[in-house]
Amino acid sequence: MILSCEPQRGKRTTALLCVAMLMIAVWIAAVRHSYPRSERWPTLGELVKSFIPAAPALATPFLLVGGMLSGSFTPTEASTSWPPVAS
Image (cartoon, rainbow, N blue to C red; front, side, top):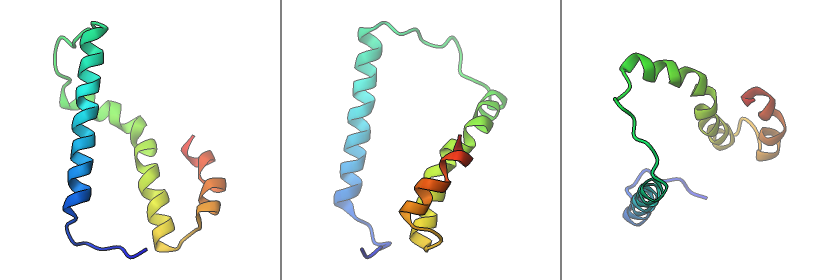
């Protein structure tokens, strides 16, 4: 597999279309099930406070893919050693 930094319009368009369709699906589900809306937007402090515990889980895909692409470890090594760290 050859990695390229050139723009790939087809893949980008497909990804944006997928994101848009998922947003529409979530909106339909929220309206259909009458999910409540938040009374106010969270403050920056609340966002940072909620992000800190989620940071390891959010970083895991980048660390795994980065480690495999850089040759630091194989997919098999990643699957056996990473879950204890992420949990």
